[in-house]
Length: 611
Image: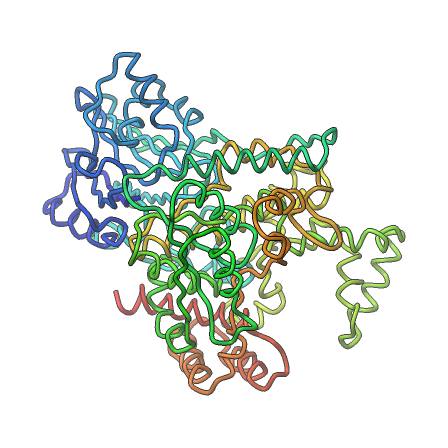
C-alpha cells in the first residue's frame, strides 16, 4: 500500500515542489520515497513495503524505460499474470505485483484492466507517446483524484498532495454544501475543492496533448439466478470467500484482522485462522450497551486468534476530530470514521496489513433498511392516488407512531430512498444555510443509477444504489483514508471480482426477509462460526455520540464552532444553535445533523485556516 502524486509541466524549483507534495502524503508510505521527472511530467511516490521488500520501490519501469508506473494497491493474481508476461518475452527486474502493471500495459494496453484482480489506483507515463494513462479499481477501493488548473494536470492518491504546488488553486466548492448536508459527503465525481475530481470506480483516463478523456471499463450489474436453492448459494459464498481470503493474505509481512462482534469480520477472521495465527483488533467503549468487544473477544477465543482491544473515551474521540477530517481530505460526517481511525492506529502497532469485512452488506444485502420494501408491500397494494392523498393529509399533523410509514408508503423507491445517508432534507438544509445556492434535488444524483436497474425489484435497486454511492463515497473512503493515516494497508476480501460473480446472481429472497438480512451469507457463516455471531443484527459501528454531545464539555466544544466566524459565513447560526440545544435538552436526537455541520467546520479549519 502506498501513495503517489504527480503533475505535468516543467517548473523552476520543480524538485522542491515535488518533494513538498510527496511529503504531504508521507503517512501513506513511511518506508521509502522516490521520484521521477522529465521535461513533461513529475511523479512522486511513498512506499509502505508489503511485497518484495528489498527491490519493490517505485516508480517502476518497463525494459526500455519508456513507460513509468506509480501504483497504490494490491494485485492478487499478479503471479499468474507475471507468468503469462514472461512467456510473452517480458523481462522482470523485481518480484512485485507493481511491475505486472507496467508490462501488462505494454502488452495489452487498456485491455489489461479486466485481467486484474485486486484493488488499485495507478498512473503510467508513456514517454514514447507522450500520454498519461490512469485507472481505478472495479469497486472504488483505492482513491484517485485529478485536477486541471491552467496548463497543469494533477493526479494522486490524496488531494492534500496537490496543495503545495504553486499552480494549484485551493478554493472551496461552496455550491456543494447543500449536497453535503444531505448525503454527509459530496456525491458524484466532484469534491469540496473546486476543480478537483474523483475518477469513478471502474474507469480509466488518458491525458494527451492537454486533453483528458475518461472511459468506463467495468460496471456493476446483476444476473439473478432463481433456479438455485439457498444452500447452493451459501456453499458458493463459503467456497468463494475461502479462496478470496487466501488471495488477500499474500504478503511478505504479517497480516491481521479487524474484528467486531458481527458476521462479516467474523467469517473473514475464521478463514484467516485456518491459514495463520493472525492477530485481531477491536474497538470498544466503557458503556457496554454500545460496545461489541465482548462478542469479538469470544469469537477470537473460539477460532484461536489473539485479540487486542482499545476502549475509546469521549475526550479522545473529540480530541482527534481535526486529525480525522484532515486525513479524509473532504468533510465526511460519518461518526464511525473516527472509530476506524483509532482501530487502524491500534492495529498499526502490531501489523502492516489487516483484512476487514467492508463490502459484505452491499454484496449480500446487509442493511436493515432493505427490509422496508417488504414491510410496505401490503400497504402499497392500496391504489397510489389514495396513498398520496392520505400522505398529504398526514404530513400536516403532529408526529405520531406510523406517520413516516404512511408517508414513505406513498412514494416509489426512487422517490424515498437516496441511500444510507439522508441527513438534512431540502427544506431543512435551506433553513440552516446562510446563502442561497443553485441546488438540485438529491434524487437527481440517484436517478441515473435507478435508471440502469429499472427492471429489478426494489431491494436490489437499493443495493445497486448503495454499491455505487454509499459504499464508494463513505465506506471505502474512510476505510482507505483512516487506515493510511496510520500507515496500515486495509484489504477487503468481500470486494473481490470472484465474490461479485456469486453476489450478482443471488435472488433477493436469499438476501433479506422481514426478520433478518444477509440470509445466504449468514447461513454460510453459521456452518463455520458460532450461531450468535452469524445471526447478530447489524449495528454499524455503534457509539455513544448522542450522549457525548449532551455532556457539557463536548457540547461547549461544538457550540464554539457553531459560533465561529466560519460558521457565520456559511450557516444560519440561530438555526444550528437551536438544533444543538434541542439535542442537549433531549427534545430531539439531532446527532447526525450536528455532526454534519460540526465536521464541515472542523474540516474547513484544517484546510483553509491552518494550511
